[in-house]
Length: 354
Image 1: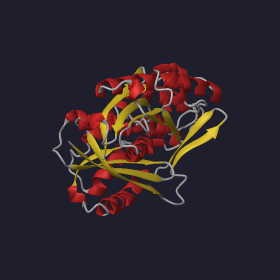
Image 2: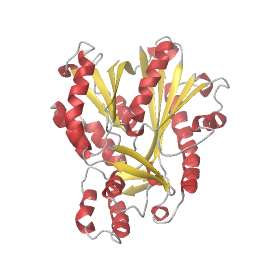
Image 3: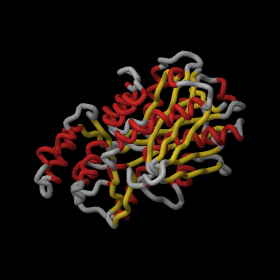
């Protein structure tokens, strides 16, 4: 059995309130959209209060090419990932030289050598460490990373895997894209990084309290490529963000989860805890409605959305950290980690906690 021993997060350095982003967006979009006084209402929902970005607000109002954006991505990704990794390993009581494998997840920038290779030079990992960079999974990336870490530690139960997920969504902001998708994305997306340490059952740290990863379930829905993702432009990455996502959640999440848990001899009533990616208020509400959950069941997801916005792949790890820190669970109680991403795809992980 694989176990999550520790999770650490690293916020981007520039903290902004939703009202500050609202005023910035109103100024930019009003130049081309006559309906902005009505559309700006997407910023008025209290579900998002603050967010974090790598750059100050003025940077986003200027012209930037793909190369400049990507250079900033590489620099910030290394810095933030290193900080999150050290904090995570310190919390677990493990040295960098004792990490067997790095899983690095991201979708908002490119780097060859990959960011994990750059980290190996910064943090002095074992020279023979295994590395798996994973790109393009978007919001599903954090949950998918946990799934792959579980697969690896099942095959090598004596090993420790460091999972790092980072997204700098702010660097993709296109000031000349006046589409509704870009407006919605601007009201939600932000920057963040999270690191998690996962060990196999024969690792010495497996005796410590943590979250036991029992099994995972991946789903990709056909003919749904247009639901979410990035379109590559000369100026960078342009967001693809369908208005139908909450409806898709309502229609697909419950049967998907039922198929998974029934195969494990469980029912929905056996799932006591939900660690869900906070894609937005409508998405969280769609989860709650589809699964007939009580009002407080997704409070950790709501808290992360309020304090950080949607950081894409690391968001679900932020929620997992809130869950583990709260210790509001009994031994053996089942829970589900869930995230949706481009493809259109779903990643589910069944867990219980010590």
